[in-house]
Structure formats: C-alpha cells, structure tokens
Image (cartoon, rainbow, N blue to C red):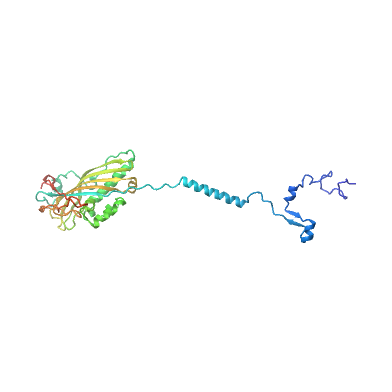
Length: 356
C-alpha cells in the first residue's frame, strides 16, 4: 500500500523513488509569481469581463533595451571623436608658401671701338680669340664638387646645381632658343610664381629691368644674324650655398662666345664672334628641388659687339663682320619716372675681339 504522499496507483515508473517530489526544490515565492508570463484571472474578473482564464503579462523591463544602449554608445563615441578632432586635428594646415620674387635683370650692350673683325673660317676666329681654350657646349658648364649644407643633403645640393645647369644650357646654348623659335624649353624650368612675369616679357617686351626677353635667355634677331657654328664656346663657374634653413642659392657666371654671320648669306660669308657674359642668381626651396624648377632672381648680362643706339630688349642685334657701331647712345632715361631702368652701355675692348 502506498504512502500518504503517493498516488493511489503507486509511484509511476521512472519517477523518483522514496516519495521525493522532483519540484520540491522550486520555491514559488511572490517574485516568481509576478515574473510569470501568464497569470490567471481572478474569479470576479472572469465573471464580469468574460475573459479567458489567463492573461499574458508584459515582461518586466530591467533597465534600457539593447537598441537604446547601442544608440547611447554610438552617440558617446561620436561626441568623444568630435572633441578629439577639435583638440588634435589629424591634418596639418598647409605651410604658407613664400612667393618667388620677380627677376631683376640688367642687359648692357658693348659697342666695338672700330670695325668688327671677321673671316669665313670660324675655327680660325676661335683660335685667335680669348675663347681658344673654352669648352664646347654643355661641357663648358661642369658641375662642381658639391657638399651637403647644414639643412640640405648632398642630393638636394646636386639637384639645385643640376637644375641651374639645365637652365643655362637651354637658355644660352639651344639653337632653337638662340634663333627665337623656342622659349618653352626655358619656361618649364621656372617656378610657377615667375611664369606671369616671363610671359609678359615676351608678350610686351619693356626696358624696365623686369620684362626684357634678353634677360631671361640669349636670342638673336633672326632677320639680322644666324649661327655660323652651332658649337658655342663656354667657360664659367657654378657655386651653391645655403641662404637659410629653407633656401639654397646657386650663382652662375659664364662667358659664351658665338660665331655669327648675316642671315641667309650662306656658308661662304664672313663670320664674326659675339660674346655674352651672364651672371645668374638662382634660388631654390624644397618644392623647387622636388619639382626640378628654379627661381631666377638676378640676371646681369653684358653682350657685344652691339650698337648702343639700338634696342636690345627683345632681341640681340649683333654687329657683324666689317660693321661699326652707330653713333649715339641709348635713348634718354627719365630719372623722375618710376619703374624705368637706367640705360647703360659699355665699350667692347679690342682684346676681347679675335686678332684677324
């Protein structure tokens, strides 16, 4: 016979023995009852509302939902990022770039004392002149031994010297530049801040010390003269020095000697020598070095034989074999007019001419 706690049929098979209840450990306290998802309506509620026996109870909300928590977290992250970006901006403001100063140029014509000597044999002209030992073409513009400076490496100094050499070669040795057919080869080597001045010089040449094409490059009046020998003789020096922590300067001082003859006269016409002394001052910042460009800040040119009575602003108009300088000098200069360069003219010494 079963115990007082057993069902009449006895303990079911597979059930716990000894009269133990498997739900005995579960405590149905008040909090457990309130947390139940289903609750039984009271008898009065069922009579009055004809409601079902049980009702569904909304789950208790313990704090914020997951979506709200994620939203709050995102807002906090965005707010913190905004504060960080305001205090420490990851992008550096661009450095203020210094504008390249305009080129200051001086072109001085040198008038011969008598007739210009000449002969059809250009080699003989060179041999009998001070240019007998000069190098030919770009070989006369060698790069000096270079050393790093306090703020610039060896490679940066070499880059400055190489760019200066390229400018010299293109502006004074390129046959297309010398004959007035080409200017772009020179223009591409200039810093962008100087391009407007360069373009204005060729569009509206003016003898104001700022806008003379012959201050930028060497070119002859094609209606007057042509090259009798494309192998120009050159001699000179290049020097690099640090101007300050952000600037390198290169000084170039070269003498060029050209063999010229009258335009269209043919190979048998007498040729004469024309000499150009150029002192150029270049300036380079780090962007210039990276872009292989230069700021040309000073151009000092002496050239002859020329007539002081003729304008040498746009083209050089050489005096050729057998010719003499016209009487008179350059047009008068008004010292009260601002922006007007002082007209200068020199005399070409006999020792500078070939002994023919």
